[in-house]
Amino acid sequence: MSNDYRSMWKNLGLNLESHDALLNVLGNAYKDIFLSQKNRPQGMEYFDFVMSEVHGLRIKELLNEKESGRKIIGSYCVFVPEEIVLAANATLVGLCAGADFAVQEVEKVLPRNTCSLIKSTFGFKLGKVCPYLECSDMVVGENTCDGKKKSYETLSEIVSNFYAMDLPQMKSVQGKALLKAEYIKFKEALEKLTKFPLTVESLKKGIETVNNKRKAIYRLNNLRKTNPSPISGIDSLLINQVYFYDNPARFTDSVNKICDELEQRVEKEEGIFSKSTPRLLLSGCPMAVPNWKIPWIIETSGALIVGEESCVGERGTRNLVDSSGNTIDALIDAIVDRYFQIDCAIFTPNPNRLDHILEMFDKYQANGVITYNLQFCQPYLMENMKVEEKLKSKKIPNLRIETDYSMEDVGQLKTRLEAFIELVK
Ligand code: SF4
Ligand code: SF4
Image 1 (cartoon, rainbow, N blue to C red):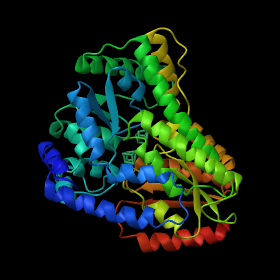
Image 2 (image 1 turned 90 degrees about the horizontal axis):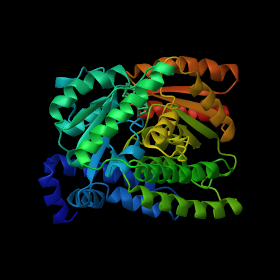
Image 3 (image 1 turned 180 degrees about the horizontal axis):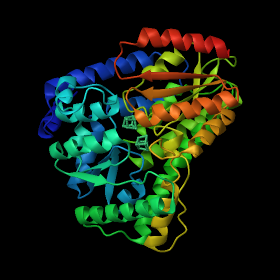
């Protein structure tokens, strides 16, 4: 890393020693997990580059944006509408943290039995290792699960520019009205911050940019339906993770570019694994960078992941926003329509998610479903029971995983996953 980056990190207030340690672990894991794959599409080089520069060049770009007057908005959830952020002359970055950090410090402010995702959010802040968090002009925390909303009370004390967004818990008329009111409030807070009042044009443009990003992902998803699949699950997950960090237009172009290559692979029936490889659907909690544990175990144990029913996956990207409205209110209604369909397990009841899992199982020609739960995640663990019932009723093989970010259970998980893969063969 250049000295240029080191002074940039220092100016952002990062703890350079801890940050070096994090980058070291990340770099080694990346080499072992991603670069060791055989027969990868060439288009993955772009995403390798993005990851190698995730704390370098991308942060420099964001700081340049800030210098030119744009604002950076950090978010922890796919309910924060990027369309509105872009329309207000700001850039949205995902802050979801996927690794343990500063655990001892974290456990001084959070109960031990908190999910890894929330702990990691705090670990990255307390350990001063996340340049995205430090360069954000506003950090949006949403009232989703109890763990998040209660922990945000503490986070707001250590993140000075914290913004709380309330979210509905039921898919009712009142729930939808709450979402709309919150999006309008968010729009106003952004306008105040950026001094850029939204216009119909800027909002339409924001919608178009994000729709294009999603359409590129749909192209990728479509190609994963084929057997043999032209791309691995772990590379597809990486693309879905980079979705949250990269410049949107450049990301869209890069995904479309790799899809051009994958189309040729499909034509030649060139797969990443053989046609007889068991195809698995992953369903459950989001997997944020660098949480690659389960996909890595699965794809080094003889199976392929063909889809992610996850916020870092199809739950987060499906459905487009209708951009045909001609007033700000009509466009916000269209945004609300789209986001209100997200079937996060914090909603009660949440039957659409069960249907979506079945739909994905068929669409991606899967042979089994792995339900992925973070320990202490009440919404997804509770809902797992319903998911299991549904899958059982359709005679779909299913394995429930409950884990955290540590590597202590890798051996045990590998044994269970290998046995499951044998079963679905
Ligand atoms: S799982 Fe729910 S709370 Fe978490 S990112 Fe997705 S929508 Fe947000
Ligand atoms: S929904 Fe689950 S995984 Fe997500 S933050 Fe809440 S407890 Fe953690």
